Image (cartoon, rainbow, N blue to C red; front, side, top):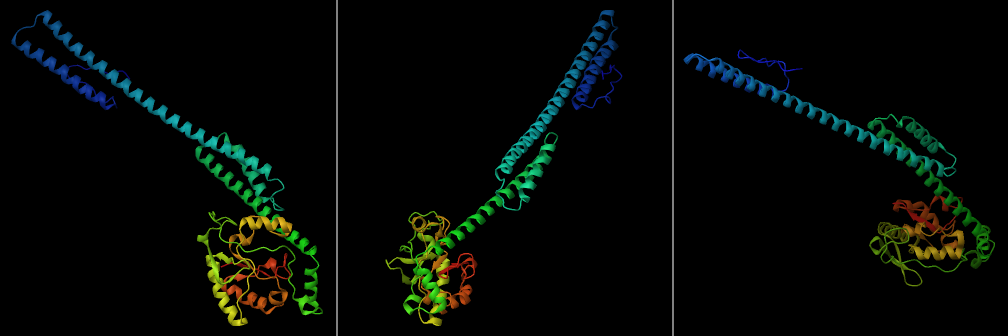
Length: 370
């Protein structure tokens, strides 16, 4: 819109919405009016000549021209500021959208890799992989036109589905490892020295001499309980002294105290008091905490019958073995009957897998569950 021409009688201001223009117009009116009044006062005192009238008119026109130029400059500055602000907002929105879509594209690429690498590794239930694949398809279909909010939501959904696949893979790996370990132990026991099956058979039939019937069921090399691991980081088989406590009533044949995690030791102390009151003697111990090096040695000596180093429950300080003596602690012994019945009250149990009808029978093994 072009500015209107002002004269001495007044100058219209309502057309402009720019505060700076309003101020300049008011100043212009005052300047032009002042010039006119001054000229008029002078004209009252003496008659104007033609030259004087031309001069007064020139002054008024010059003042009006200055005002018009100022108005144009203000208008142009305001328009420039509005354009710059609009450009900044558009650039910010585009950057936000580009970043969100880039993150979504990266999540989709990683998800596709996870789907590929997890093939055949999640067990019989393929639901996690199917869900991830479906979310990847949906994300790819919407990626090109997705707003930043939608892109972030899709990225989160893909990440959640991918984590479910990773969890399924880990669970399947644990299941397979446990099954393989149980099968290996079973096979090793089947191939163990003759003394073990003879002892088990005689214990079942009661037909052998007392010496045979009560012979140890262990036929491997001797191993000993472990002391705390110096400089241990707290992982399986690397427990520091600060995490372990020794039981008060027993040591192994080399004089090493039987260490367990401190809360497990405290519970076992209470259990032993009750065990002694019921059976007349302390609970005998064979192995408790087992450090990583001992786990490696046992794996080398016993093969798959021993736990994979770094996975043994003994490496957590939460497991113990009583002596492998069938008469003292075997399946039908009073000691085992008492431990199975009363141990859980103190947090100590015979795991299901170690029961007589379990996947890997070990009458000598107990674990602290709290």
